[in-house]
Length: 489
Ligand code: FE
Image 1 (cartoon, rainbow, N blue to C red):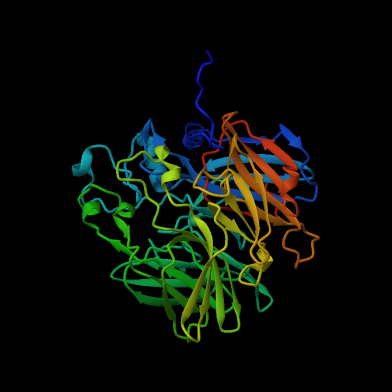
Image 2: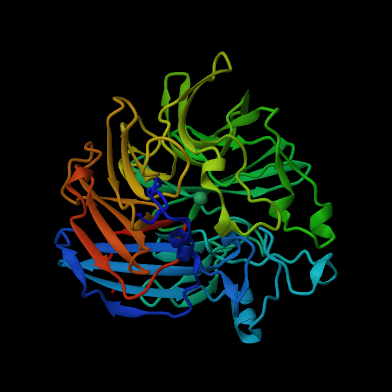
């Protein structure tokens, strides 16, 4: 008789996947010497990544990875060599908790202080965890978290220099979102465009535009009715577009110490999303167009076509959230609806919307060529599931031509779990070619219990990695990052 072994039907293993959520406590600084393949010598610059590095304190786990303390990784490329460094953002709360070696703050996504609801009730302090994105702009390296001020870091050493108020623009406690866009051509200049949201019974959105030296050159405030939870937005030369998803916020369980503030948000799938089209010219009025869009965290890109604005996004059927008290590492992927690429055609004259699905494959963390931001484009890159249908962890990098329907995929299944890809254009490339360059992504290699930096040829993902740079340790699943041509080694 033969022993029955479980039939392997999935390209992933949940237990292996969940090990990518172990804390990385150490801080490293070393040249990467274990490399399969060759780093393209023209690839020069620094990849910065941010994400929750610490997911527990002395074994007391945070309830959700979004509550994890921000840890920055910097991978510098020069002359075919690479250097790795990681460092925690020394936020006020991180320093206090590391000294005390216990959880002192509640997290937005459900982390509670020890001692039950009595120990947590009426504690409304926010822990600025600086864990969502990292950008190098105007000579400053900034770690971003959407509900508070950015932290400024030394781009060479990653040492925390303190909170940054954008040269006096932000008041104490003001927010600066974690999803800025770089407009590639604003009267011949590049501009960083970002926002902040002040939620309440009505919501105030502030838009900021920073010139290349990092100075805020344009700022406007707009108020819209109702509560809003908006993580990202999209830009075009004339507009900023927000999806005000239909959500309801009941603060009572938060106030009483029973839930995190983020756990008190409920998605109302029987109500439409309000699409807010805000002109970058502050003298022009907002347009609001309702549409059933599903829940959207991230936008791929947007552009104008006469009176129509096209917005491409990654949409979920509903706000994805684990059941209260459930361990996020035990998520049942197959039971959840996949996040997919959708396109909206917003007719600003007639105030009508056409909605079409661009692909069925589960995906997240989209990116486009920096020159195509806000402009007509063909190619989007993103993390994706290995299989074309059904929901699963991100194991592949997808290159999607949103016009022709062409697809290319590189998959790290069954050993690997990918993070957001970052597209780096070749310095000498034709600025109109959308795939002359490289995709950089950190992959958790579950079979070796460590991470690697994978470099793909964006022109042809099917070639497989040009290089796999093996790190000496794992890097917990991160969120967002960016690339600068400056080498900080
Ligand atoms: Fe995000």
